[in-house]
Length: 302
Ligand code: UVW
Image 1 (tube, rainbow, N blue to C red):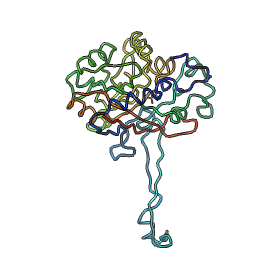
Image 2 (cartoon, rainbow, N blue to C red; image 1 turned 45 degrees about the vertical axis):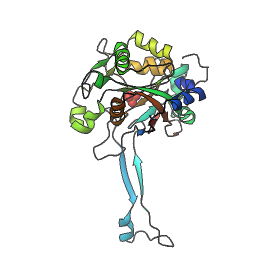
Image 3 (cartoon, helix red, strand yellow; image 1 turned 180 degrees about the vertical axis):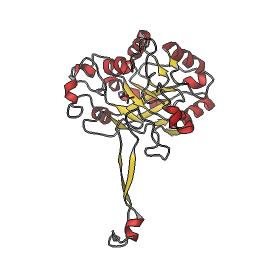
Image 4 (cartoon, rainbow, N blue to C red; image 1 turned 30 degrees about the horizontal axis):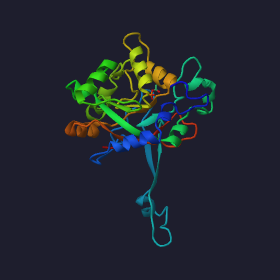
């Protein structure tokens, strides 16, 4: 990665060609399907990065509009309800555009950070949405591997953990596999509530930066990383205090596409039941012009 062409805005999705789609489809056995997004605008709220807010969904018309006489049925008697939602494009299960984060004024592929001034002119979510992400995926259930329901605040995942978990599951990670990692952390929000989830300091569990980890992503040409956390990595690297270093090392430098805030519980249960942790994954985020990211509801077929 990193040498995919000077205009490239797809990063790892370049690896997901027709052959990879076929490899993913060939792994389908039980034909069970799983939809991996969280619910937008749920009464429980939306788990979001601190500083963002959850979706607000409002009705613009409903039966009451007709009862009050504000609206009349259409000719023939049809009535209808309408609603709208305002939300952060990063505020639910989403794909990040590769230009979502940067350092030293350069985005993915060397694009100038000033191209973000009127929305992401380069490396937005749109090229990812046009391409789609479909291929062979593996789930590494780190929580189950550690014999826990869910990882705790700040709990670290190293490359060694990924490889040991795969070995214990009997999962072979192959070149161009989409990598999903379950921590169980998102359930803290839904089952224990926002107070526990955001209990300061807010430090999610997750992957921790190491040179070996980044080299492994590079060599294995992992196109996409998805997790059941907001940021796909431990919030603060305990070794040096750096915040979200894998957003730099994987997303910005290598072009690994991030699919965050996944609900992996049902999929993980099914994998534990049948002992199969690989499957077909397909997703296309909403086509948002110059979006930093966009909501997505990825589908897994086992
Ligand atoms: C930030 O943008 C800070 O994080 P994320 O990519 O998890 O939304």
